[in-house]
Length: 238
Image (cartoon, rainbow, N blue to C red):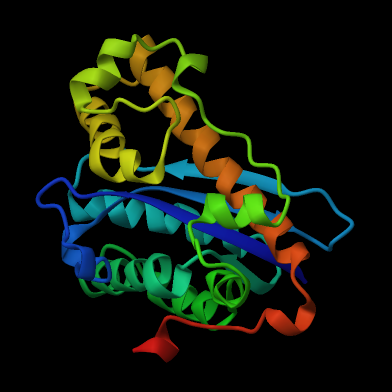
């Protein structure tokens, strides 16, 4: 039985949520799911990032959730690592899965994500016992975990592209995906621009960013004592 790490990337194409509404799925759409899997603590991490293949219609959410469930179904999982998954990732994964099941677009994916949620170790919980700045990057830095930053200049995308979107920082941040880049990527997919070099580079950049976060969850997990890491599901918080 192995350990899964999961991290989602979202966009808010219709309306940005207020600070206290990040648990309201009405504001969010699923863009990509980053997955990591390790058989044991001496094994290397297997990783994948699965992307949305169409626009914001429910059938494309259903397609992505089914592909994630298929990936998971080929692996034996005993525990699931997230960072704030109980406050964000699994709230929305369960809501989307329940919706697509109810619409008949998927069959049983809600049970898959409910089961994973019950196995969840939300690493934001032990982090709060030791650190005041709880951003994932800050906690990793404080615990001497090396995180490879996703630098915009490393990709063959003109800087004006980011400037026009309102991004003036050098490194990709989660807020950039949620506010700008996730929606821009899906817009490119709906326009059939996947093979255009700009959008190929954009996808590569998003993949690198999401994959790095999923892999570092294992390092963060290993940095804590076993007694620190208790299962915390989003269901138990509701």
